[in-house]
Image (cartoon, rainbow, N blue to C red; front, side, top):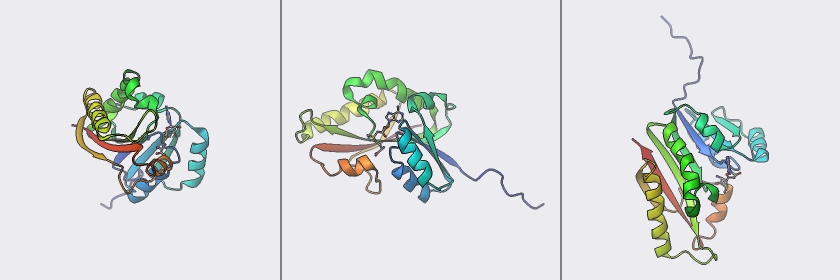
Length: 190
Ligand SMILES: C[S@@+](CC[C@H](N)C(=O)[O-])C[C@H]1O[C@@H](n2cnc3c(N)ncnc32)[C@H](O)[C@@H]1O
């Protein structure tokens, strides 16, 4: 018996980006990985409109809205990976930890087992002086413990951002590496 062509495209994985901004990163990732569906959630209407008119890839979905509202509505254990590149302080600031933790608990619940969450985030000094190694190390330890307390395991943590990643804010922040120290954390749910 001859096999019918699949009606549904053969996508095998779903990756969600939180706060896609200009959608340049998600577009680049999706282009190299056509069998994965990439969903970018962005609250800014203008950036979504520009991304929709620019991106022609079939495996990229531009979702306009707040990830705070959209992520909790996804089915549990349905997403292979989340990416957050330089989230706004409201969703990562040390002083606001108790406000943002409930959101990342939803992210954790929506991840499949196994699933992964890549976070690229930055530390700056309050008066914009270079960030000392001591401050960077203390911040790293706090970040890891905050996400561990949600249930994530830490697969890797390195200073800097993946070299192949480019986005408006990433490209801008990389220009000031002493005052804006970036870390990439790879969390997993097992
Ligand atoms: C610092 S920018 C980083 C953008 C992009 N990831 C980059 O690296 O250029 C943070 C982005 O998150 C978006 N954002 C903030 N809160 C959001 C929310 N609740 N839901 C969706 N997007 C949000 C902002 O509009 C902004 O585009």
